[in-house]
Length: 148
Image 1 (tube, rainbow, N blue to C red):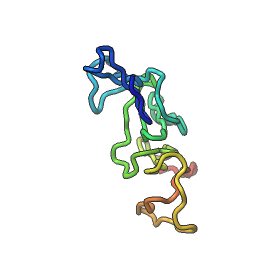
Image 2: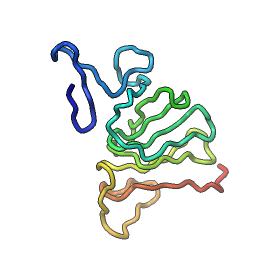
Image 3: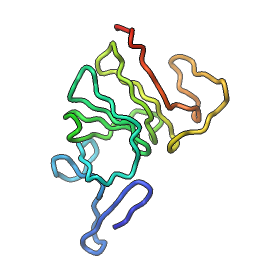
Image 4: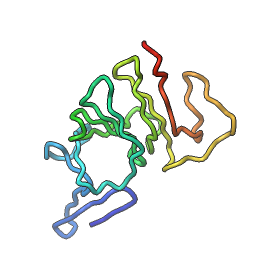
């Protein structure tokens, strides 16, 4: 076995070949990008929250340290890594479903492990712009009164 700060790999042939020991593909096929995954129970990370989609009851989302974000389309039986598209790939702290628009999610992200340090005190982002690289992005809420 070989473990680093976020993965576990196992060999059964003296090191000629290795397989990942923390998850496997849901259908048992070869590992590939875009596949659904199931955990072996040995994931080396922390989960910040689990969110159930109010519009699509089979969809569940997880905000993770180190691996970012995962989504399930089968009530948590299998998972897809879904961090692509975020400019901050390390940690997703919070996920919020837009209460007025099906399929729209918002996320609080960071490029740093666990709680990031604060940037300039009092600085606030402008609507539609990215936050500065090291600003705190740990919590998020949607206006529940919004209808569209």
